[in-house]
Each structure stands twice: as C-alpha cells, then as structure tokens.
Length: 207
Image (cartoon, rainbow, N blue to C red; front, side, top):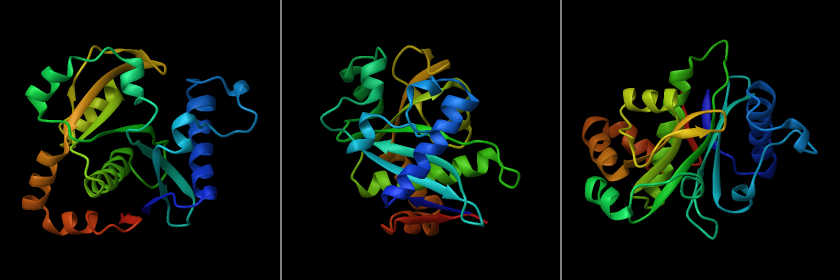
C-alpha cells in the first residue's frame, strides 16, 4: 500500500468519491440527495486543501484525508466550535506561527489493512507535509473515538474547546504542537524522519 498526495484532478476526484461513499451513503452524515454527482467536496477543496490518498497493492483508492491550510476562508474548527482564547491555547501549546487543520479523515474497512495501521500511515504523511510547509501546529475536529486513537498513536492532540455533536457524532476540537512531535521523531526515528522530510509527493509505502 502507498500513501500519496493527490497531484492530479482525477486523483482529487477519487478522494471526493470516497468521501461521498463514506460520509453520505455509509454514515449518513451528509444528505446524498444534495449532490448532483457522487462526489463530496466543499469550498476548501477549491484552493486551501492538500489531499492525500492511500492505494492498495492493486492501485485501488482505499483511504483519504486532507490538510486545510489557513487562507481566505476561516478553518472549519474556527467556524464550527467555540474555542478557548488563543492566548490561553498558546500559553499551554506554544506560539502558533502557522496552524493547519486535518480534515475529512476517511478510513473505511479493508480486508487486508487494519484501520489503525493505515490511520498511522496517513497521519505520518500529513505530519511530513505540514513540517515541510512550516506549520507549527495542527488542528483537528475529531470524533471522540478517533481522538482517543490519535492519543494512543502518540500524536498528542489536546482539546482546545468544548466538544459538541458535529457530523453525526461527539466531536472534540483539538490541537497538537508539531515542533514537539518533530523533535521526538528526529531523535527516536531518524530514518522515518528523513523520509517524511524528503519532500516527495509519493510519501510513504506500507508493507
């Protein structure tokens, strides 16, 4: 399996279709009838998002997620959640030089790959891209179960606002300090760190 940045419009459309199948048809978080074609996309996909795809050994798209970079449109976490004051967040998590948001984390079941394995692979790919972009922090509006998984995997997300029901489940607005993660990765896993910082759009291969 490989994880890659969606570099073409067709690869981006593969992501939109996976998002539609999961969010609209499987989970019912968004009404399928609102879409003229079976592709879930929003205003962020027009220019503020970096989309990642995971492909199985037969090159079939099986997972997707994206990073939303700061821009003209406020980040979703800023639009949909009541966050703690920025001064308070920075006093705990450090000065936010550039914060981007992890979004649309779509990990349906697969007969070969375990969910936590591909989740970790996608997270590591996101981390490498964010560090190369100069991001100091990453935000996430995470389902409470996915939030716990991120903690278990060592990504150290912490709440920065009150949870609420959003997109069909209890969701926690959270942040992680990428500089702290980078330092730990550089010292503990230098080989993986070098791979992530290589700048390649073909980010990661997973056995």
